[in-house]
Image (cartoon, rainbow, N blue to C red; front, side):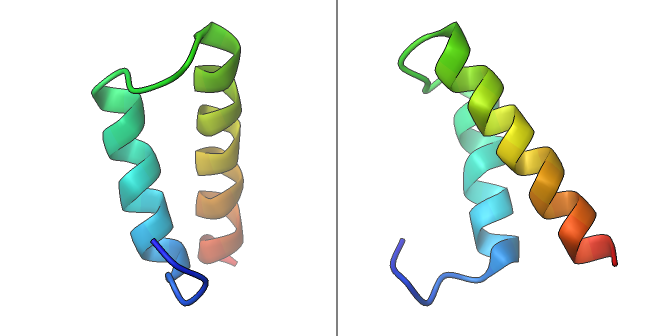
Length: 45
C-alpha cells in the first residue's frame, strides 16, 4: 500500500487482515475493525 491507495483497496486489505487474524493482539484487531467500519460509513455517504 502507498499514499495513493484508494479507500476501497484499504477496506479490502483491512478485511483480509481481520479474517486472517493478522493483528498484533486483540486491541489491534478491534482498532482494525473500527477503522473498517468507519471507512465503510464514509464510502456509503
